[in-house]
Amino acid sequence: MIKDIVSNEEVKRFFKNELKLNKKSGTYLFYGSDSDQLLEFALYFSKGLCCETLEGDFCDTCSVCQRIERLTYGDLEVVEDVNGIKVDTVRELGYKSSSSASEGKRKVFILKEIQKLKKEAGNSLLKLIEEPAENSFFILLTNSLNILPTIKSRSILVKIKKRDAEELDVDEFTYNFFLGNSRDIENFKISDIDLQKAESYEMIGVHLKKYEETEDFKEKVYIYKCIKDFINNRHYLAQQEKLYFAEEILRGTNDRNLQRKIIEYTVSTLGNLSGLEERLKLKSMLRFPVNIKLVLINIFLNL
Ligand SMILES: [Zn+2]
Image 1 (cartoon, rainbow, N blue to C red):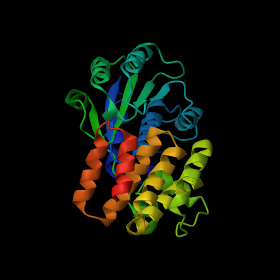
Image 2: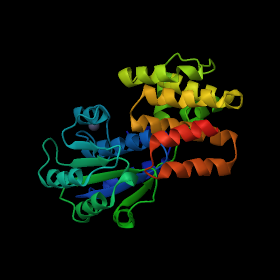
Image 3: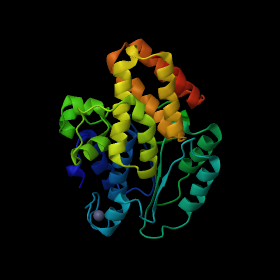
Image 4: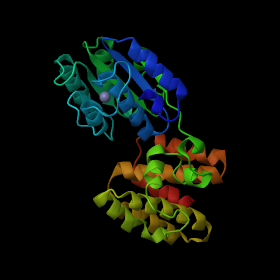
């Protein structure tokens, strides 16, 4: 139920009031820095819209709520594209939203990473939300409000605040290790992983390969540990060793999204250590669709 959601009391109040209105359609823009948490809240709201047992809330136990949780509910669609959702995909959503719901009475479309949307796709989305089909709900997720202003003004803005260490019930060290990411921390809490035990940076390629194959959370933690080990030792490493580290990452994975995450983790971890200016510089490098490989090599060579 809404009352059981941890953190973001204001958002919980908003959910309650909004669901009470029993709207025919709606577009919401959820924004915040933790992408996993944005999806988590979007799913809560979707459950609120579609739950079969409760009006204006969700039970979390009925078949609809459970299928929404597992992303297998027929009237819920989660759309994402590492390179930004394409215009054709948005058009397809137009057809889907105008056809009738297959399971319940409402259809929910969650669109991830709206900040990556290119102009054409953005305009197409704008058309869609300007004249929404009856019983269609759009939940747009974004890390940044630097998006088409018209999309912003047509949506109801909902800011999702990152949970703090207390809300997640962990110590500061654990919280910082996972950069406050809710899902990582919840996974960590049910594991038996020892965060204090270091892992050599040289192992990063091995762990990346394993993580790609298995998506095992333990491997993800090893990857973080390798990055931390590299950062801790960066002043003692020769250029060759730094280059080796960057190359190991590129050998370990071709997944641009994963490579990006490695850069983001490095930048954020460093940000806690070094000056704000350096952090901003690194962050601005990430904002543009630059060659990720080059950024990666550059960052690790210059640390
Ligand atoms: Zn339910």
